[in-house]
Length: 158
Image 1 (cartoon, rainbow, N blue to C red):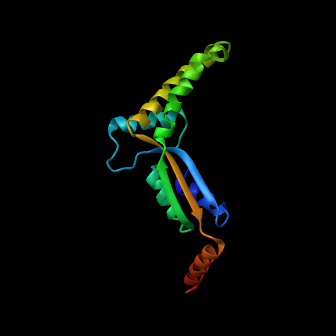
Image 2 (image 1 turned 60 degrees about the horizontal axis):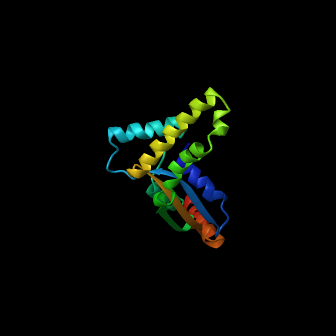
Image 3 (image 1 turned 90 degrees about the vertical axis):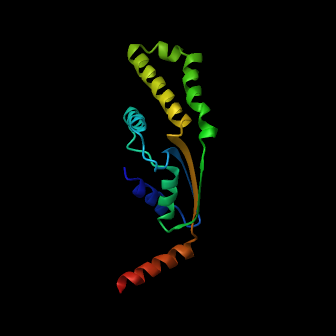
């Protein structure tokens, strides 16, 4: 999926003056370029959880601002607010394993894979390869959006 089109479509359907909040996993900003180890870790996360790719918090901000339809755009890194949840997700299964135990070997295998992936994601957050991005923006009011659209339409007729 195309992150630019994804952001543009969300903002297109957002009512004038409306607020958008995007909360998602993000990779760190580049440069510096990813090391081979970082690339391998990202590849593992993409493949294990079927993600197409991640972008940085800063890239989401650039994409939102690039629509020219936003009055304000802000962002924050919420790793410190969310990192504990990764290991907590593993411990939930440890404290109450019976739903998994009674499902049989196929589910046991899937559960072990999930535990490994949760731990790898936690470590990616812990070493700043991954971040948890919170992006928020307010769309320009209708009059501002329409004025900008009219200007573009007039300019394209010349």
